[in-house]
Image (tube, rainbow over all chains, first blue to last red; front, side, top):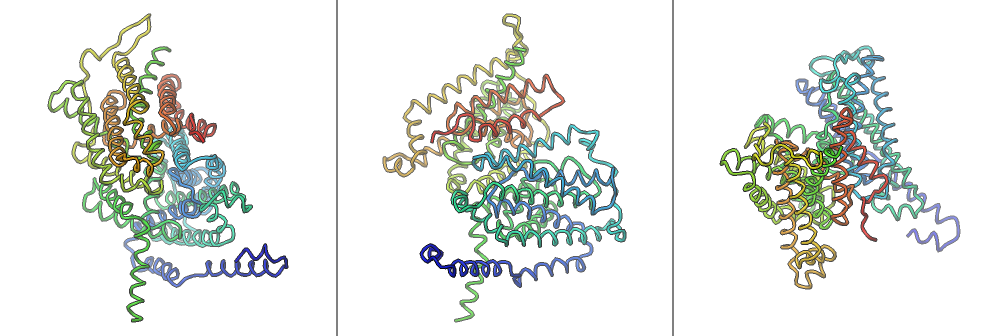
Length: 344
Length: 284
C-alpha cells in the first residue's frame, strides 16, 4: 500500500500513511489486560509473601538485568556475552559511592546508572565493526573479562578477591530502613524495576523502537531507508548498559556487599539463559525468565545443593532442542484450541 | 629471552591444536561450539586417570586421550549437534553453554573438584641447552608433536579425498549431496576429529594449564580468542593467532606479571578493531 505514495503526487497519501502509522504505534503501545494483571500480581506478592522477600528481590534484580539484555538482543539483534560488565560496574560504583561519598541509596543508583551508561557508550562502537555475531560475542566477552581483571588488580579500590567491605546504606528516602528480611529491599527493587520497565516499554513502542526492529531484521535495508544504523544501535546499547548498571546497584544496596562475583562470566551466561527461558523480544521475557530461573534454581539446589547447575543445563538443553519458537507458540496454540472449541 | 619465546611457541602450538577442532566446526561448519573445552577436559581426565589409576605410561595414554573424546564427539554430533546446524548462533551458544555446565558438574560429581596431577616420565622432565639457551624438554616435545599434528591436519584438509569432500560439503551442501557425498557422515567424522584433537591437547596441557572441573570454561575463552582473532577462513589464521596469543601470554606473565590476563583481552580487542573479520579474512 505504501507504493501509492510514489504513484500519486498529492499530499493526501503521505498524510494517510502517517496517520495509519501513528494508529499502529498507538495500538502497539496500549496496555493489554494481561500486562496489568502481571504487575498487579507483582504488587500482591509484596503483601502476600512476606517471608519470601529476599528471594523475590533477587528475582526482581535478575529480571531487570535480563530486561536490559532483551533490549539489545530482542529489539536490536545485538548478541552479547559480556553484559555482566555493566552489571558489575554498577554494583561496584554503588558500593564505592556508599563508602566514599554518601550512603543515600538513590544517589548511588544514579551514579551507577551514569557510569554503566558511559561504559556502554564507550564500548558500543566496538559492536559496530563490520562483523559477525561471533566477533560481537568475543568483543563483549573481552570487555567483561578486562573489567573483571581490572577489579581484581585494583585491590586498593575494590578490595580485590575479598570483596568490598563496609557498604552501608541509609534508609530509603530517609524513612524506610533496609531490614534483615528484605521488606524494604523488595519494595525498592520492585518500584525501580517497574519504573524502568515503563521507560523501556515507552522506548521500544516509539518510532525509535520500530527503527531498531528494522535494523535487527535487515540492517542493510534499514540503512538504505535512511535509518542511521550506527547511532541508533549505540543509543540502545548505552541505554541497556544503564539499566544493567542500575540492576547491579540494586544488588549492592540490598545485600550491602560487592565481590568479584558480580563481574564473573557466569553472570553474563546466566542472564542470557534467563532471557531465553522467558523468551526474547517482548520485554516480559526477562522478568518471567527470572522468576522461572530463580524458582528452578531454588528447587534444584534444594534437591542437590552442589550440582544444581547440571539440571539447569539440562533444562536449557531441552529448551534449545525442542525449539524456542515452538515453546513460545505453545500458549497461543492452546488458547486457540480453547477458543475454537468454545465456539463449536 | 629466547627461552621465553620457545615457551610461548610451545604454548601457542598447544593452543592451536586445542582450537583447531573449533576452527573447523566454526569456520567450515559455521557452528559456534562453546563446549569445545569440554572435550579437551575429557581427554585430560582420560590421561590423568589412566596414568594415576591404571599406571599406564604417559605416551600410551595419549592415543586414548584422542580416541575417547573423538568417540563421544561423534555420538554427540549425531545425536545433538546435527539438529542445530541450521539454527541461529544464539541457539548454538546457549546449547553449548548448557553442555559446558553439564560437563563441568558431571566431572565435579564423578571425580571431585580438586586439581588433577600427573607425573611426566623422567625423559620429559628438566631442560637441556642448545647454544647456551635453556629449553624445557617437555616444551620441545610439545613443539615437535604439535608441529607434526599441524602439518598432518593441513595435509588432510588440503590433499586428501576426505578434505576435498569436506570442503565441498561445506561450500554447497546440496550440490555435494547431489554428487553422492555423504555430508552427514563427513560432518560427524570432522567433528569427531576436532573433538579428538581437543582431547589430545587437553591431555598434553595438564602440565601447563592444570586440570579441574572448571577447565572447559577457562579454556573456552582462550580457544575462542584464538579462533576469532585468526579468522575462520582457513587454518593459517588461527595458527598465527595461537602463536601470537601464546607468546604474548607467556611473555606478559614473565615481564609484566601485574597485568595478568589483561594483556590477552586487550590484544584481542585491539586486533579485532583492526581486523574485525580475523587476521586472514574470508575471500569475498
